[in-house]
Amino acid sequence: MILRDVQNEYDERNVYLKRVGVKGVRYPIVVLDKVNHSQPTIATINMFVDLPKNYRGTHMSRFIEVLNEFHLEINPKKIREILKRLKDVLNAQRSVIEITFPYFIKKEAPITKSESYLEYNCTFEAEMIDEHLEFFTSVSIPIHTLCPCSKEISERGAHNQRAMCNVTFESKEMIWIEDIIKIVESNSSAPIYTLLKRPDEKYVTELAYDNPKFVEDVARDIALELKKCDKIKWYKVEIESFESIHAHNAYACVSSDELHA
Image 1 (tube, rainbow, N blue to C red):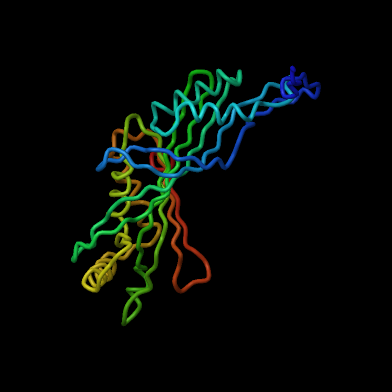
Image 2: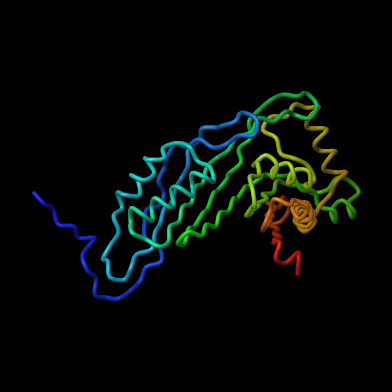
């Protein structure tokens, strides 16, 4: 019995679609880990191709079939192969994949050396048009900021809070997620930890107090560090501080385009 292929039928509306595909696919993957070589995690994956104006629809099942072909391993080389395979299987000129996943690093508390895991959210976003590939990595890093103004005008203490730094970059060669995290944490008022005993809490509190920074300071300092890295072709730094005494968040953003202008 031959079933009708509705997706392949001719469409007369003459409208090209830039992206069609699947979103929110939950899938187990293995990513590269600087310390342990590899790390299993669970990703949320979006995959798209373009659709010529004369086709009614794409074949959604083929996206999952391509993903299954490459199974667990996710790295820049594999992503290029996945995108090429999507274009071939779906007869497309453009293919896109977005892979978002939690990445865990074991951290030692600064004084007691107590170990715990901290989660960082990461995204690989890649697009292939014909044979040209663009590949971006994003890493979200929780940090600690302490307000310089509050410290300056207050007789006792200063307001401080958790903030989130998101770094998106395009690199010329392999850059470890851990290296980006190190740059961000070293340019904040203090790093964030999952487990702190009392001696650690004292140390982190005093470290932040001795290193007050606005979100603007953090964004600029990180940008200048990233500028020194020859492996990075382009970057954007975003800081959002979850203010402890305001009913709003503080925000700053800078990209390499603006820094070099």
